[in-house]
Image (cartoon, rainbow, N blue to C red):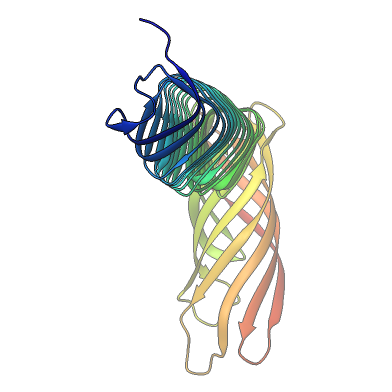
Length: 361
């Protein structure tokens, strides 16, 4: 198995049939591919409009209207209208009209029309319209519809659908859905999921096994150090309220529904509300929970009613006393800033209210 020839310039219409090089072990400083090239290495520049295959390494600049494949390592600037495939490491800048794949590690930038895939480690940026995938550790930024890292991530993921990190995440995840193993960064999305949250989850629903950081959302769930209780109480804001108090460590979210809102002109009225707060455990039996939230008010309209929307912003201080292992007494006070929007003018009704009831857990 000898070493191939070295050409300063190689032209290939079709490898072996119409090409200067006759062996896949040959090397060229500059290569022109018309339809198909198979060569050992390209040192400086490659261009063409077909399929270029470098069995070993390619360096320099590649501008190809077709598909480029490198068997081992690539270093430089690579642009291919269809895609780029690297069997070794990539160091540099890679643009593929449809996709880019690298079998080992990348240091640089991958931009793919549909997808980027790196099997090893990645340092730099992956940008695509559909999906970015890295099989092992990632350091840098992923921007795409969906972003997936099979190991650890330090940096940024921004997705229009979801982001996923299998192991340890440190940085920022921003997407409708975010998934991580251990979260040492910030998750921002409609749904945030991880096995251990050490810093911040900000979203509509936040789920973790162990909540050791801060969750901010309408629903915060911690499977291993959280829980839920069923709450029922009456107040001078509403005749009857029922709902769930959901704990993620000491962070609390309330989801409530009420019937017969006082100070409405129709007894057929109700509301749904969501609150966020924090449990201060003052003793084994007594918990004090300051919380605040939004209440949407519904009421049957009579013929003379001109309002178009009613809601309230409320702050509450709720105390819970355990009377048994499963039952707690609830008592508290609150302030309601109620807005009644009318077609002509808006007005407010402010109210201090008290509440009393029970919770079951």
